[in-house]
Amino acid sequence: MISSTTTNILRAVISELQTPVVAVLLVLMAVTVVMTGSFICEFFTEHRKLSEKIPELIERINRAEFSELPGLIEESGLLKRQKAAVRKLLQEQSMTRTSREAYAAQLLFDEEEHFHRYIRWPEAILRLGPMFGLLGTLIPLGPGLMALGKGDTMALSRSLLVAFDTTAAGVIIAAVAFVIFQIRRHWYRSYAQGLESVMEVVLEKEEPEVAHAER
Image (cartoon, rainbow, N blue to C red; front, side):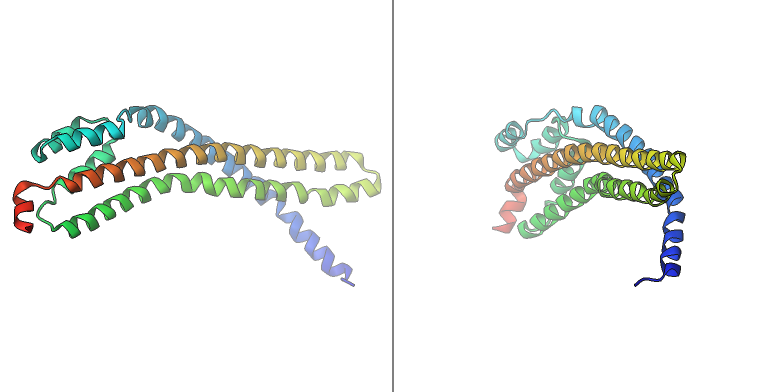
């Protein structure tokens, strides 16, 4: 049997966690609002500007001469970061073919890491929101049940109100984070796949002098 002293200590510790849990939920709600604003801003300022159809760009790259590639990439509808990555690859024609492939792989990895930072927050909030929502639900139920046993309906009502509010907050936070996480993950996968396809085609377009030297 667990002693009453032990259970009282546990009850006291758990009760003291109610305020920090509610505070964390408020912080998560604030972060979710900021994240939603950032997501909307990104949609209008960046995602909508991605007007390039990758298959058509690949076809134009294949038809163009090597000297025409910088201008072709600059005039394309790729994102600024994608253009910058391809320009860096085009500027390293002094490397061997193997080195250029390794360099392209590193550039692609850097881009993926850059975009991955933007989905870490919604992914973390997606997991933390329900956890703290559940904690905020369970913690006040103890005092609520004790109040019910004493016939104190007002205290029971307050405990249930806190439990329902924290549950709703956790679910709303997780729902918003889930939507942002899914959409951003889809965007960034398409960005990475498009950039990888363009880089592969650019690697095939060797500068004449370099191609002759390698032979």
